[in-house]
Image (cartoon, rainbow over all chains, first blue to last red; front, side, top):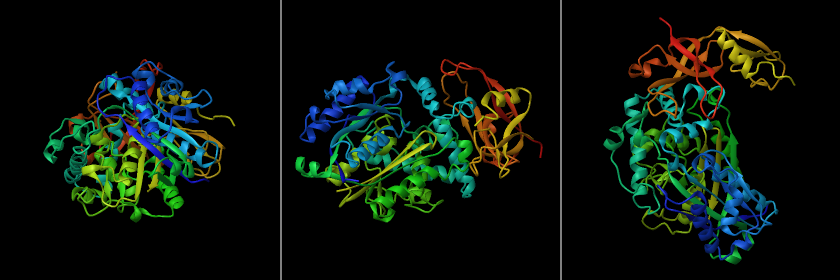
Length: 389
Length: 135
């Protein structure tokens, strides 16, 4: 496979937007193309992420309209990807695979989502469509509910009093909000305390409001090219060192929700391709859709042993001023926000900016290797990307 | 390949108070809810099997922010059948406010209740229920 690089990266401010999915995507996409010293006509394909446009705007088949909005040539195919919350990461991985395979030299990938347009009841219903419809959805399971069940299972499996585990989890939210307070693109840019988290309304026992990421609007996009071409175009391309993706079935087949086997398989592919291990990673953007999700991810990625990440999280070890790898300097999904079709591209945007030392007050000193981790559905899809400067 | 026990067969079973899964004719593994092939060995030779409908709670949550069309609070749980498979359903017959960690490991009897279809899933379906057994 040819070496593949990322050129321009861009994201809109995440939050509540009055702009349409296409308008947000055009803002991010055109900025990414301009940063790459390229023009829309230079793009050979669009790998487009969107999950719920059908419900948000009554818009199916959004990819060709995004293509038109960016002014791409008719010869460049535009394809929609949907992998629930991992949508954009999966789109980016497939873009990189096809550039690596020599099918294309320069492409654009990313995603857009306008989840707040639906309101909470419809958004909760549509997100739950990523649960198995015949055998699980009918019970009224929700996304917070799935992670809540994982939380109870984690407390039971490792014999941790639930109250103590919840305090540890609250510190994940505190850390990510502290990081997000330094990110002008974040949905929430305010620090919170553990009291804020533990005083929030209950969403799905034991997860409270501040254990959960928000519904957000936003878009993010990046330009991907063959490495030689990338080096000719910009001074600081970031390179794909390893990629992985794996799939899990419904929760009733997964059984132990504390071990997300798809993540373990996915990140193993990425580490192997990169020829590195978890100890070599300088900065991580991982899928903290809920506070427990960050703890599960830290263990599945090999940063902590199983059953121990809650303790490290409570001690702030993965904060910007911590003593381990820095996790979610952007604020994560929790604070930066989670427009599901765009999230993976925004995670990549943060890692690329970190590796280029462009992250200002939340810069991770000396970051050379970064890891992206994105989870889709009720643990059904995991996609990992390892990037290096 | 012929699909032995479809979702409709499974639904019909639930309506009759039966829990119909499939058993692998090669390795004896039991799959419930049913599927196209054995999850343990990949064999497609499967025979219908009626399960006892008894098991233990493995995890749960109380849903308080519900999808459109659902009325919270209600308890969603995963239970392990005595025969091995796990399934998701609603823990009923308890006050959701009293659902706590002590539920995990408790014995339950399986049943089912009807859930109305909505705009997006037009069919009414039967969904598994779990009821705590006197211990």
